[in-house]
Length: 422
Image 1 (cartoon, rainbow, N blue to C red):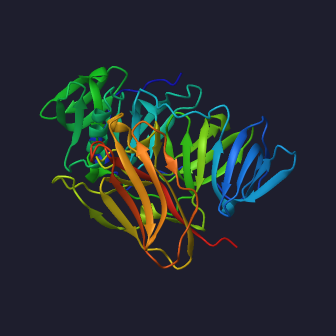
Image 2 (cartoon, rainbow, N blue to C red):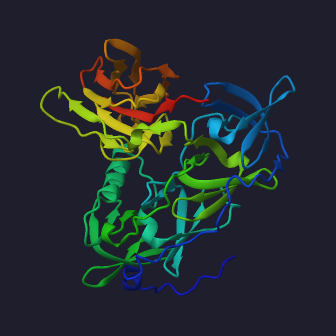
């Protein structure tokens, strides 16, 4: 057990330390070190040359993944050719996030953690879904907010998430489970209380605090450039990573874009998405947005967020990259001259239960490339790789369904253009 230090720590000292960079252990991607996987792990691999391989993970090096096929042959896929690796067993079902809550980072990452205490201007937290995993330390300047326990009402969760992402400058805010809010300065944390100060120091019952939002002016918004991919864990955590490499006994080490290094078992990994040189992320593009209201309300289009400002979540699984829109909305993307294919998933956000029904279409010029009907509560639909004409704009369209615009909160998930792969 880690001894608990005194709970007093100085938030003002943190305020003056925003520029201090928290540096994690450096990982060397592409080192070429070969590690043998100890136990059979079933995976599904999709490549940028549009192949699908299913088999066992035989080996992962710094430059390639080795897949043992059912025939007994081994297929080697170069790292730059990897699009996605999905762990199919024993975690093939939908992700059920921990009800305990989450820590939201400036980078946009969401970690399913239970905060313990603060030491040296770092938050120490445990992984609710992985009790044997070591305590993780995160710099306070990298944390946007904390949800201590997820509410039963999905709408309340979205309101808290929107409050975290759209926090007003000048103060921290504690949102209580009884719907009250306490502005001021966060001063401390233990197993029983969240200490907050406004005019006087107040100890808030930790069980009564739903969400804590930190002053955005005092956060370090810098992160490492060129993330190498996205790791989704079986507890629902979704993390942008800058580098990763395999380690002994079927484990994976990755470095978050904040600099923090995490090591996990492969059995705790749901999916690894590779952001290689052949992919162009539409979540980083600047589309032209055309929204036609059903009556009078105009909804925004949110990058990497749902249309109500929360995280992108379909079928119980959160995604890190994409666009959240409402019907009827057209997103028009310019197609680069070297792009040959488009791919995306699409579904209705989980917030509205079974009320939503919408039509999704992808159009380029006079051609309908793909169309699908999406319903609340269903799993996402995937377009697969769609051939596109280089240099001609393409439209991602969310249209009204059977219930007009009721619940039509559409999430375009992980949309990408694919360059020609040699």
